[in-house]
Image 1 (cartoon, rainbow, N blue to C red):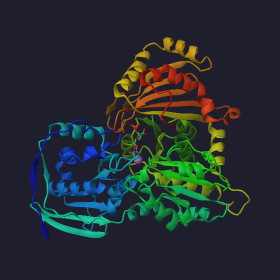
Image 2 (image 1 turned 90 degrees about the vertical axis):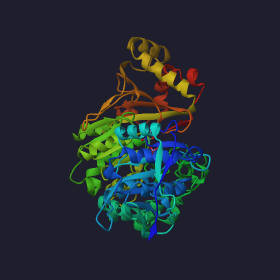
Image 3 (image 1 turned 90 degrees about the horizontal axis):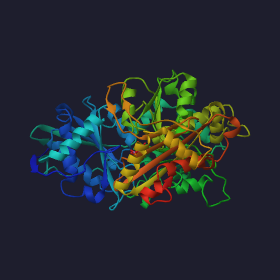
Image 4 (image 1 turned 120 degrees about the horizontal axis):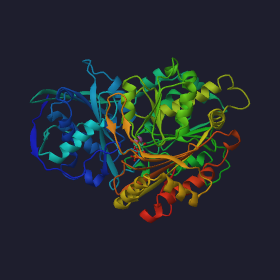
Length: 584
Ligand code: VG1
Ligand code: CO
């Protein structure tokens, strides 16, 4: 047995180690500074109750981006020195964010113990590589992101840290091989590192949720064609095992499914701009091809918690997607057969889900942006399905959004709608399902404009001005009439504030809202996931109940509101930008 010793290293604080919407994200070069990662990891250990560190089992893995392999070794040595009993690592340090959540909740060690938390190594949809982003976040025993009370404590620890503990003489562990247990012995007793298959626990869970046999039949139908793009993120290893090996999809239906440390130089963000290859293949791109697009296409982000769902030449907005899954879950997905406990969306997400909740008489919640707010509702048994406009959808099977789950949910709905029809002339398509949904519930036209990497000071001023203007709605409405007389009046405006119904905690300043008389909404927020400058997000939504008007082009339908949003916020004046970086 290899013995190790514990070294106390003196250190000094770094500025700006504040976890954002989803952990700490910075350039790799920032993380590579001596002690930078170590300070954050020790600050996290120090923020946790002692029994969640000493003698505990902790998961360490992520989306495989550049610097992950170094980070795993550093965190393992620090875990050993801090008295952790066991570290679990996915092979090659790969575990999707949803798989980490599943591993925390489901995996059991030989002695019966379970994990009490995880360091997830990812910057999600941000690019990776030596000059791009790295990230780290801590998830708790329920499998969900640490709540603000914990992340605030971590941040305050980073400002006062003077030393960290590390087992410098612990040898690096070979994480490329599945080795059940490598045992070491330190001053506080045994310490193990287990390297395990990254997909097993997650697949086992998926099989308890979905009817794999019915999805298999759908995929076997010659009329149903399928395509999945992992954008070189960690989703690729799950896609191969689940879609190809378990469900029988053709290997050629997988695009970019080999994880790469730099995501092949791309942006691993599943939207119409960055998932270009898939978008072209689905007949939605600029390049025309004679090949008939597949019936169904989907993509994931770097850590596989996001999803984009496409039909043939058809885009499903994420806000519609969660509403449609919620409306169809009970019939189509065995896990939900006994009914939904409730549904929830983040504030900027369109109100399509609200209409479903009202119609089906379901409990409904509106929470701030970021998955951590859904966790409490789920732990309390108040919510089954939830989603965000940012291509995030999920359920209470874990405590993270789940990109592969969303695809399986859509395949389940398609399988259900086509169950007596697989040999028929024409399948019910993704587009049919969405249009039927609009016909029943009305349509929420929706778009998001992102202005990335703008000057942080200018962004703050723009937001402050929007808050100031809220004090006089009559002035706002006068201005709006000058910009677009065809847009309805603002009837309420505020900064979104959330009181958690479970623990009573209050989160303020969660986005600036302008609510219109006809149900339209404009929302303005600053992103909390970027690594440089500021990103302004503008969310634009309009509800249309009139069935003769639900078939319009989305950008056309929203043009008047977009005009109002940009002029009201003085976007160009403050930022110097005449166009957004990305439109989703
Ligand atoms: C963005 C999205 C938010 C999402 C978050 C994490 O946050 O808007 O909905 O939960 O990313 O997603 P922000 O603060 O930049 O708007 V992931 O897939 O990057 O963990
Ligand atoms: Co992500």
